[in-house]
Length: 387
View 1 (cartoon, rainbow, N blue to C red):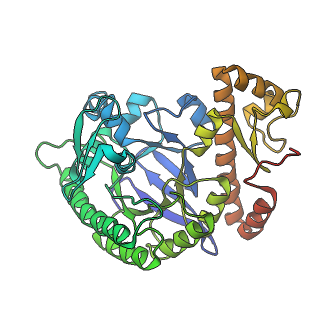
View 2 (tube, rainbow, N blue to C red; view 1 turned 90 degrees about the horizontal axis):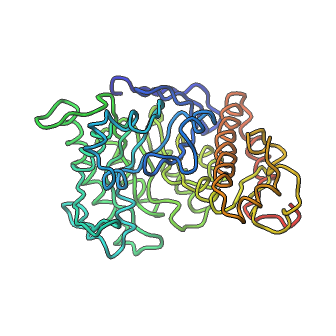
View 3 (spheres, rainbow, N blue to C red; view 1 turned 90 degrees about the vertical axis):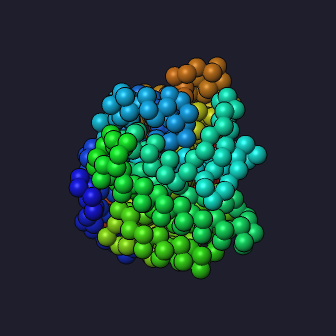
């Protein structure tokens, strides 16, 4: 492990693990959910709000921060933590997923990805080396390698090609990261304690996942992520691939399932031995009026809530549920008041973070399977007409 970064498993309950991940900006109790701060902000909230909810780590988006305001400007401001006023840990993605989502605006070559900015059409080249340099200037605690994420479904040759290219890029990215870490000329990392996570690809092909995991681990990263899931495949298939892959990653290192997901996905990810999660779903859905509760999602815009004085979730103790009725939240949503997005987001993130807290407690007490069964009995992805 790099200086300033450590991971220890404190409890096990089957494959589920409870642990402590130490970073240069504090300790993260795992399993943990990372709120997404795409452009250096968790949408609709202040950093005080996010900290008050109990988050210890957030995610920043390299693609968006590179384009605006620019990684060099952020470095001159003292790095991302100082720029956004966040005292906890930060993980930055490589920008690869966003670039690959640009469709016709990007071209993949062995060198990297050429793309045109969605902001002004300017041409850019993102290479494995440049992804390292950008994140070094951002100064995150955890940096991700550049990888290629194929769509689902995709032809077997496309999936294999993306997996093998991701491995070649991972080797180049790791070599560049070591150069930056050891003070190569022209480099000046904002956060010398930054570590780098490798990413396993391979679509839903279990043999490719095993091959990718073995080769990625051989490169030698501080920890490992599972990428390329939650891109349209059925949940049960995602769970089986995640479990198959996690079992092939080093037990003593953190495991990160990227871009996942719904609350029941987090529970199943923990059951597979995953330690870290992120997803835009709780914040994005909040802004669209969907509240995630202990019994499942509700659409607060629905007319049935116009005179409903109950809180969004009677089992929740968050600020929104203590102070706001469904009727009020519906009023805010239908009139477009910004306060509605804030209150909805506070609730959704509180629900996610509290779910992770309850998971950690269950693992510590050896009752995770009991928690898992009870959660699935109560939580339904489909909104209930009687709610």
